[in-house]
Length: 116
Image (cartoon, rainbow, N blue to C red; front, side):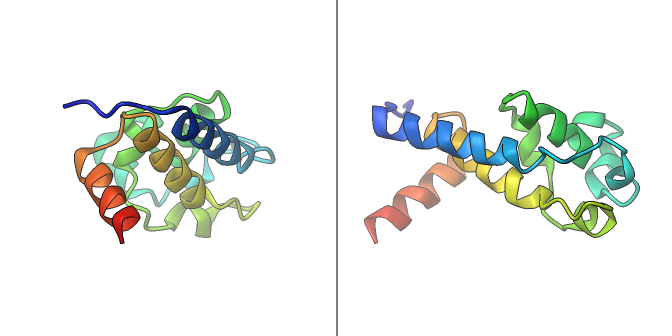
């Protein structure tokens, strides 16, 4: 059953998406983050790399590719500008859950946390 999205969740999701997008304001799209990215090495898909996340989130595009990130922070260690890519990915994941587009396991976990 699909989650009914209320106005408060939509506002919170849009705020999270703005925060995630702003993480990449200083990103130069140099691609250095791709060198160590395990997802990129396996999938060979630009969208799954740190730079791919930067492009998607800067354009405010939420996509399931956000879940391909392992959150290992290899991209952050390689980034010459110290951009916190994993923080942005986590915010984007939360926004997707709030918009009803997240993974079922994330939605279940969020609901359990909110119930206390």
